[in-house]
Image (cartoon, rainbow, N blue to C red; front, side, top):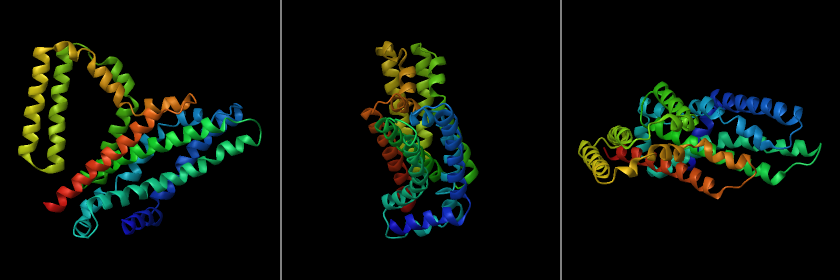
Length: 287
């Protein structure tokens, strides 16, 4: 794992990707910090961080698009699969490499509350709690990007799909407010989601039998709920979309509240997509 970590980390600094990511990220953070904290004389760094969550949509796909897709395209992934490193070790090494790049940005950001403290009173506890929450938010997005990159051989496809997925997480609250709430419409949308999950399973496992079985069981369970107790579906889609809103969880840090549920949520997303990426690699290793 350590060898993979060093190789990936080195690759970001032998190309322009690492430098561009760090410099652009810090430029955006710096601009918002000057405007919202220094010029506005606000001591809350959490307001700045809340305003720049869009930066994940812009920059993280650039960081994660090549990490697995390029290996798949050049067939150098076969060297990884035949190495003594476990699938989990491969994923951990690659994830820690991209997380280290992001960590450099966050370490520099940690200096901002100290800069403000030179000129007045700063709520340090809430400030660093929001930085910690922002770090966890970044970890969740990086793990999602890593998973998407593992599904394709094209960096462009990986980047575009990652952009779309991240954009949907940003717009999730708006989407939740306009989706239909009737049980019939909700059931139809869930049916499409089940088909999409089956397609994703097939992409990951290349096993048509398991994908079809999951689809049949999912659609049967959905039909049973719809015909036996359809009221369970009323408004459920809005609640599910609200739960899937990755950005919403960060709001609690903005209000100077350390939300343990948000921490658990971000860690769960990170480990879930790390696990899914491991399964993709394990499947390729034994296929």
